Image (cartoon, rainbow over all chains, first blue to last red; front, top):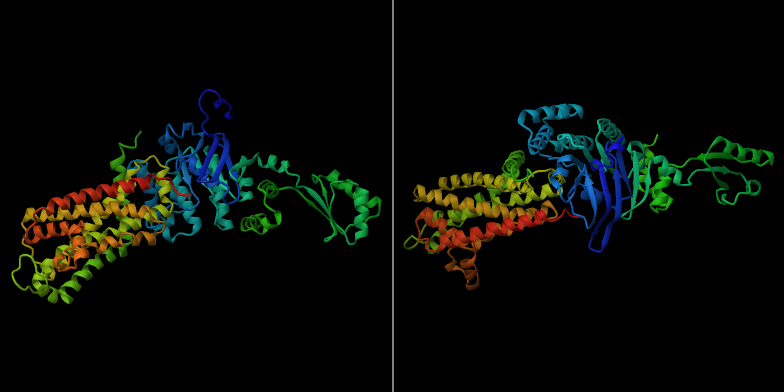
Length: 335
Length: 267
């Protein structure tokens, strides 16, 4: 679809090469490349402090960069910063709403700053309040809103100008699971209307759910990029786990399966056999066990998910990472 | 491209926003009016009798009384109204910076200056409201200026010029503060600066070092000019010195605020 925009006109999505940024001695971005096709969702996934927000700040003209080139919506960041600003919408980590103004006044403020005429501003405001289910609280000050409502208002304000490219910097951080799902629905709605979305998140499920392409950012570098499936395939996280009652049967199983890649855990009396989890692979293992009369207590199949990708690529220890808040939150929201 | 042509329109939008905010959060306005009012009543009713007889009030021959002292102290109280009213600028600018809405403004194709201009003009308007209240109370408790229309216009003009200079300084302080608490404390020293001038007593009655400071600090010539305009005391060079200070402070505040604002977002 987007192939036609390739050669002549500059691509309308986002392109960046070799973005670098340091604060003093601390290198925050160490030369990252980004390519987001028009009308797609790109997720920048990474742990806290990986440089996600810095990337967004550079691409949205908030801060300068130390090196690299970037174009957003076909405009060069340096040469046409105002054209970039006219084409983008940004929803940051903290809802950028004016707490003392009402929901409606907040939207009208943005409409005024976009130089829409009064009637048009009113019309846009009514439309957006309706779309984001905020009509009932339109006349209430935003400081009384819940976190989820503030985000919705924030996103509504972002959309007043019909931006072609929308940056969502951790749009669901701090939201409860229900509000998170509502936000996802809204993001899907935006994609359907043809805008390009640049999303940052520390939630793997969010990237998996929403993004066409995912880049994993860690320590200022992109350590992996691809679709969710491609990323999952890169990580040998899939395995069959066999649980035994005694060491003898386990030893026998190790001998019979005769695979150098089998990992044994003597403490929990279990074996991990790398596998894609397909039925023929399972059958092969079961056949071996049955033909040699080995009793296994239980068999579980573990297929790789983005958790494995993330933890493997960002160099976090799995054990510590799963006790981490963000990882727990992901687990909680998984069905 | 469109940035400059929309500067006025964007500034008006920001001004409307700030006036709305001031309406919704009146405690800030009330507290900045309360301070000079308390000072006025304190100096008139508690110290007024003693000070009226104790200091050499210009324009009054011999020992003065409470009534003479009211006329002496009100111009200083008006200056204090200006300094106290500058505090909300620092607070509102800082809360904009820390609450994230500034990043929304910065990512829009609007006139960059409008954000600060909106705050500064909004604060000047707020200050004029405070000035009217304090002046009203001063007249009610016995302030009897002898100024004609031209002198009134000049006096009000001087005060508004001061409000403008202080609003820029305060905005710069707000930009330099990490938290709203710091921002509300930063302009505090300004509030009390008129005390160390000719606001409540004549510098002649002060010890040498303090008197030296009082004579050369910016609020003394402003105070003397204001007193001269309202009460008819001698102004002399003070008007020009005051105007020079005001121009200098405005420029300093403006440049300081501008350079802080243009610095990159932290982090």
